[in-house]
Length: 497
Image (cartoon, helix red, strand yellow):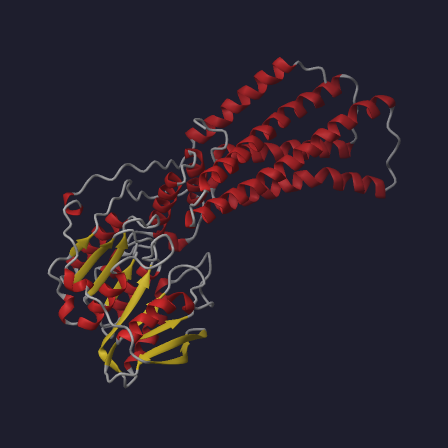
């Protein structure tokens, strides 16, 4: 145990450089370029005044809880029908990603129904939809069942029943509209129109820039995304979009950190041109976020009025005086795709690495317990009693550091997700979280180097470890080594910081 500190420092530095190189050399790399300026988005006219005229939303409304049979389960929702003479136009709300409770659309549904539009809000299905598996076509079928339900109501005009979809719903609504002519119109709110993976990667980059997070935090998350094997992440939205023949109204908020709204608009226009559909209206709402609200509060000015006037005015409003209007959208970076991770960095291999490290960490205690149960534990010799305890303490500290690093990485990712929704006061917390992750990674590296040096020195001084002690040393050093390689791949040792 007499290895000099200078020697250990040099050894740790060399290992650090080697591990840092792993993060640079191994794919996939993610560095989205700036989006080239497009004159079409720099000369957008103001929104026509007639679209923003006040809407009187005071009509009495009949509310009814409904249940509709669907594939594998029943769908439960709330129907709101104006009590004024009809028939009325009608609309079904389609939620974004997640659980999709009908209550999130209550303010909009109440406003529209009091203005003369029948609405249905419903809870998203729980069968066949989860974090890993998402069948957008199945969700589109659910939407069409609600359309059929509305069309059968005597208070509703069957020719003016449409769909409203937000975020993930922007992939669902086009599928339903392309499938069935029963859909009379489509309203897309914050619709990505690019693959889910490109949308998430762009949102991640944009939100981290707004959080002023270190670039390494982005690399950590994008490499993790590249290893995710969820098929729905590479869904191509263009085929369904290019088969929409119904009138389309699309909203984008100019402060939305989740959608590459310029490229999303380009994709939508291109697809509708391919479909020969000139009946589309695209409006950019000033200060609007992902849900068309201002910082999560009130709806952005003009959103509800534009929506209500457009729906109530159909079919005349299907042909706008100008296709794109509103505030000027500014998208800084392209929505670049995240390359798939190589086989050695996929989710399966990462899980296997963590499992092997865990096995290595518990191998020593289990082996010691087996020895004691068999009654083969003998009193240690004087040399052994002097040299083994310091090594054992080092191994224990390494185990706790490794577990701490895993926990801190998970907590840091959760922190980034949390602050991507509410960014108030986020920068110090994000910076502190990243500092904790990096410090633990470097500490684990130093512990690995010093533990190896200590064990080799002890062997030279006469330590004769038993079989279970060999297992303990090999398990902890090997498990920590695996975690170090994984940390290197995810950029925890890369520079700049």
